[in-house]
Image (cartoon, rainbow, N blue to C red; front, side, top):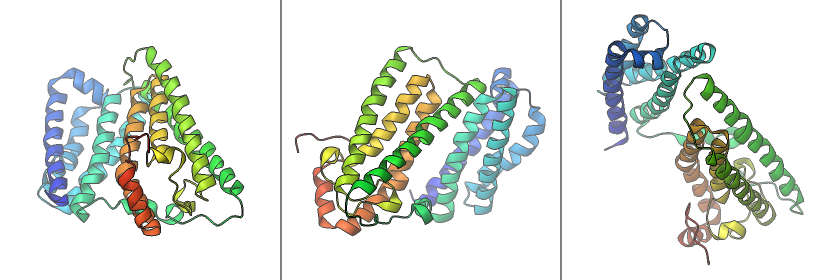
Length: 300
């Protein structure tokens, strides 16, 4: 199937799922309570059925305007329902379902409109790939790299997971997680953090650059943890996120880490590797032939 065909197929599935959900809302009080709380289902249905269900069905026929309408409405409902759930502590599972639908609708809209997901859009401006400025010593790169670690770890592994965990309980969508998961998470966090620091040191001292796209290394780094795996810092970050989810007892934080890994692997990594291939040519190709992307290969 082509990109547009996949997009249309998603909108068709969304139309069917939306219709089935509305039938269950009116037929099953528990579904209505979990996904809409005390909102009037008739009032919501008057807007949602034409703008979500019908628009998705029309988008499945290839109508781009309908795809835009369905996607915009889905995102709007997600924001509105999340606000309602945060204030009222109701309809949390509706927020989870609509958030997933929003993300998938955006992807499907891109497929319908462009035939692909234009992931290069996220790598423009300050996030565009550029080599780091040349320095006489590695010290400035090391300092910049560790400043980045503090900033990014504080935000992506601190602020966001705590906020997600709080919302998970506020929306009443928390699931029971065994207590041993916290211990496992703590061990994984220590190991992944050590890997992240080791990788950052190798990148900044040997590569004469930083992990950020706006200050990429000037040399191809194939030493340290890069001998065993091509993306040790990304692997460390994914495991850190999942580990914090286990420590917080939050399945949504674990899902956040998994989603982040998918975004990085499919939206960022191809562009990063294309940039490395342009700059390092056959050396990078040879490196890719010998070192795998995600599964470590020891003994090289």
